[in-house]
Image 1 (cartoon, rainbow, N blue to C red):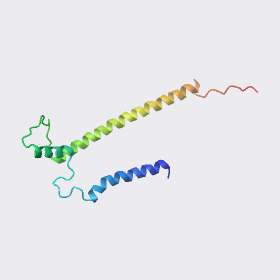
Image 2 (cartoon, rainbow, N blue to C red; image 1 turned 30 degrees about the vertical axis):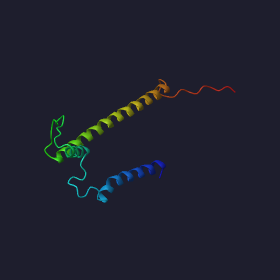
Image 3 (cartoon, rainbow, N blue to C red; image 1 turned 60 degrees about the horizontal axis):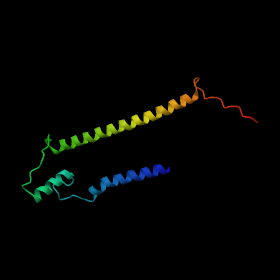
Image 4 (cartoon, one colour; image 1 turned 90 degrees about the horizontal axis):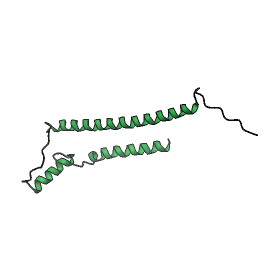
Length: 121
């Protein structure tokens, strides 16, 4: 296995461990929502400290359930990943096209590389 293959395998195992270890170790057990987001945790902390606090803004759309909220978040992440993948694909395609055009220009009008100049003895 090449060096890059070993590094990729190690990184994949590390990501898998980060995903599985909190579940395997039981982190978050005994809580109503063990893996609540930072927004929900901040809201509960604020209401504990100042029960009369009124938010400055209210959400434009409140999803009917946590599942819908999670689905919208996943859709947002997928759209963002798609935009990034498109951008990097276009960048790579332009770079490859420029390299191909440069190679064709160097090959000359006949499509073959120019002959080497004769060397003097």
